[in-house]
Image 1 (spheres, helix red, strand yellow):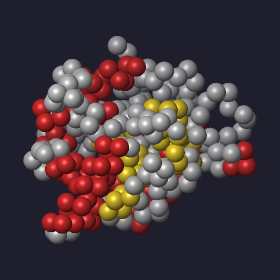
Image 2 (cartoon, rainbow, N blue to C red):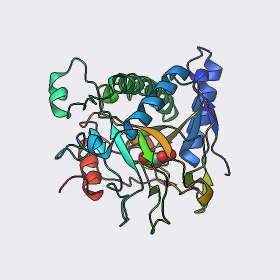
Image 3 (spheres, rainbow, N blue to C red):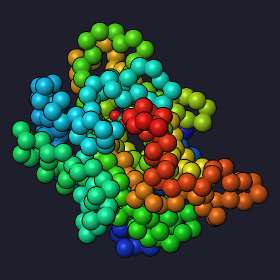
Length: 316
Ligand SMILES: O=C(O)CCC(=O)C(=O)O
Ligand SMILES: [Fe+2]
């Protein structure tokens, strides 16, 4: 496969049974093979996207001193700012060449969960940043809900199988800034090869070159979305739950050629997580003679903890 397949969410929500099934088949096949699709027909309007990028740039343009006010100790970077070079991919020594921000869940009608999650951090200098982050979070969550409904059908489950575990889920919206490159980086890249931890990831900002996905043969292929598309991929939680029927594919962000070193890259992934008590135990429908159970039973919260310890973000 040389290109990431494109799908259109409006097929799924069209009300036409044939178009709906076509979407389920297309995304199901793509996720069994390469684990990535470019998706159009999502719920993000052009104005929202434009305002979001404007505010995200405004934030990263703030002074280092101002940004560091929002880097909160003791919450493993789950909310607010994480400074340049801090996050390393699993198994790598050098930090990635990026700084980022985390918006987390806006819990409704569930005080117990509200107490479980760290509160969102409010940027005082930028009135609109906080609001546009919240609106984007909700629109991506809605888009993800429909994608997961299609995947539930593909897996032979009830269409609404994921609806309850993802309601008030522990998802993260992460605007990332990869600053201009000043000197030849020593072994470091913008984002070293990794698999995402969560159920699915919805990525804004894959329109230019940079993101690459590893195919079955170990070749890196460019993953480039059209202007109106989000890149959406399977994360390790969903791969585990489906006994690796749906593939969580290794990907990375390479450094640009020297003539483009002066340019920043901005990308905005939404990492869709369920509530921490969701059981990721391998689905019975994904086990048979040829596909024995590959993973131990675990909850989403336990799994996330394991992975954050490996990344050095929290202590074991
Ligand atoms: O910046 C990108 O295009 C991808 C980032 C990514 O893969 C991640 O943050 O998990
Ligand atoms: Fe990723």
